[in-house]
Amino acid sequence: MMLVSIFNDVIGPVMRGPSSSHCAAALRIGRLARDLVGGTPDDVLVEFDRAGSLPTTHESQGSDMGFFGGLLGWDAADPRLPGSPEAIRAAGTRLRIETVDAGDPHPNTYRLTLTRAGRTHTLRAISTGGGMIEVVDIDGWSLSLHGDCHETLVAAASRELAAGIVARLQARGDGLVDHATVLDSAAGSLVRVQSSLPLPADVVAADGPACRVHALAPVLPVLSRRGTTVPFSSASELLAADAGRGLPLWRHAVAYEMERGGLAEREVIDRMLGIVRLLRASIAEGIAGTAYDDRVLPAQTPAFAAALAAGRLVGGGSLNRVVLATSALMEVKSSMGVIVAAPTAGACAALPAAVITLAEDLGLDEEAMARAMLAAGLVGVFICTPWSFAAEVGGCQAEGGSAAAMAAAAIVTLAGGTLRESLAAASLAMQSVIGLICDPVANRVEVPCLGKNVMAAANALACANMALAGFAEVIPFDEVVATAKRVAEQMPRELRCTALGGLSITPASLAIEQRLAERKAAACGGGRCGCG
Image 1 (cartoon, rainbow, N blue to C red):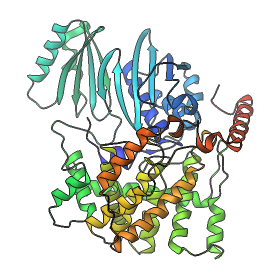
Image 2 (image 1 turned 30 degrees about the vertical axis):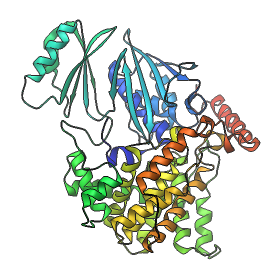
Image 3 (image 1 turned 120 degrees about the vertical axis):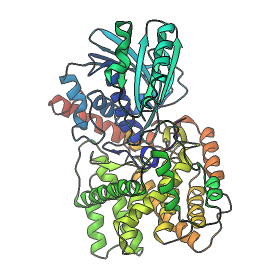
Image 4 (image 1 turned 135 degrees about the vertical axis):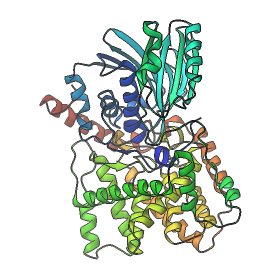
């Protein structure tokens, strides 16, 4: 199992699109598929399991947009992404998307068949939440590939040849190759080589035409390497490692990411500083007003800003400013602007809005904001290591609940609270939302997602203050996460981001969905979209 990184799994990716588990993950899967076939494919068949989440959401929540952008080799923040369906067809790729009865165990499973230059390949991958992925099968070979290193796949003509390649690579002794293994299937033998750097052509080409070589570049910002370790992976292990020293949570977060990513302390802080500055710009963009045709809500944030400035809102000074920033980020997301999944795109607003707004109110600088975001990131590590951020797996308790817990710990950090107060705040916040379902109206991640982000931020602020005042969390954080996971397993699939339950099937939601579909069809008829 790949070890969690704050910048891979929790605070990131930097992206466009309504959903990280749909758009950003699909883009990463598309990038790997592109590398597998050696460029933009000629033909693509995408198959979704009828019982999964994707048949009803792949278009409206950005899977198509992300996947096609990945096949074109684009980045998750590329401004061309909304036009990727049109662009890939203009490149000559023939596309088919079908719903099948596959019985896939994971609701976010992509089954791909790709052809380029007369050669066909298959790839099966899952979106695991927050933009993270796992490729579980390539051309019939079972594997577990996360995009966290350079992957060189060598399809050998025989088992003996494959074993010889591995022996030759392992004998190099120069540290270039981290791992080299042979995988067997009915299709033959595959050599899988993992490395921190791309392998020079002469390293794998020595066996000539008897082998086919595929080089897959990493799609994650923090790479894994030989001997990658982490100092702890749960709140209880963190407390044991702290050993009563009382180091602040952000200090432990920096130490965690230094060990996980092989980074220097300043590198860790500077990476988060870059994210903070991007988020501040996105908040300003949302307050100024955004526009996008294919969304449920108009830009409402400027009106909230005007009402706040005019003194027409009731009480809650800092909280009202947090609501303003939360709404701003959600509207930037829904207008295809640049946001940061923190921990997901659907729950992208609560944590950064709370941290940035409250830090400003406290007169703190961007470095303090970065420290608080790192503290939040470590709480996220303790959630996604044993569980998931994916609403398709855990409902909105996995997204909004995680964001609330992370934001609560971050607010305690801004206030100079202790390690135990930070963890208590996280526990209190997540306890409050166990069982929260995911039911996006009209298949768009706007309603009730905006309200749930506002609720998560308000919950975080209340629980942070309760923890700072000495309120007991009663249930340790790790046990709360385990409980949320257990509750998720008891949830009907209709309540886990499938657009088949909750508010998503109300008459009002269905009417909005129909209206948006008609608007899009009219736009396509006029040649103004890429749905072609």
